[in-house]
Length: 360
Image (cartoon, rainbow, N blue to C red; front, side, top):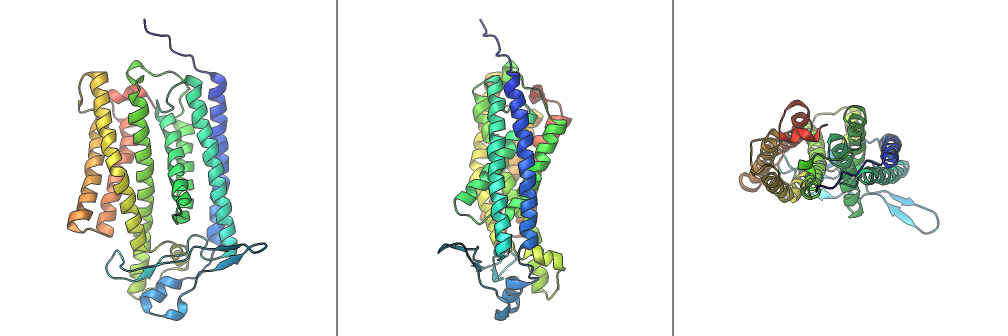
């Protein structure tokens, strides 16, 4: 006999909802703190980048040391010089980070990261409460997928920080998009906590969907770096050509890593997670064989997962064999992530297929 489905625990489901909304409130505070970080950071208009491109040593600013209480000393991010620029041969230093070498900006940046950690913990608790409310994996529909996706994206960002990577410049973009993702999830994608349809009630849900979420979150980090690379590369190119970018552009883009650093960062992120995306597609095919009796049935979700795989494979192959760097590779990487986003939203909402029983 088939065991009866476990009824949803409404109290835990309601707690999950409160936790998700609470995390949004904390992320909003983190967003404001990141804004303050950028506003109160150094406002030099050309700084190190112009000095490197025009060979004017006097404009090069050293790293700033911040003296704390007692004997403790905190040193802000020290820029490093990149030997070759993505657009070819430019010697450009990394920006010092969002704080821009300012003690006050650095303080707000640390507050923003602390609030992001708190928001992550609250949102993670909301995802766990959702899972406990029905005693299953918390990604059986688009609402659950979305809240888990944003949790994972923040987790990847915080893990990079914990590993000592200088990625605080990504914080404002990350928190903004996480708030957008959670807003869409709670406003238009919300689904009451309930049991799964039989076809989804499988241990493969834990394996296949969890890896898909992790890959998407990591691809997002890579895509954010790629988008920022395009802005930073345009800024460096304009300076190298003797142009004068606007004050706002200079104030913001001067604090980012060099274009070559952003290009390399995005490439390494995408290359690192691509094998896991390959496994995700294989795991999905195995699950399809168990659930539907066929490993491949040209379902829209299957097709666009494969299209995404091909796009990232072309990007990595071009980088490895054709020597593509810079803007051409960046456009291809963004196209690949756009395929992933379409598979995330467009396929589920606009197209009908065998995955449609998951609902929104």
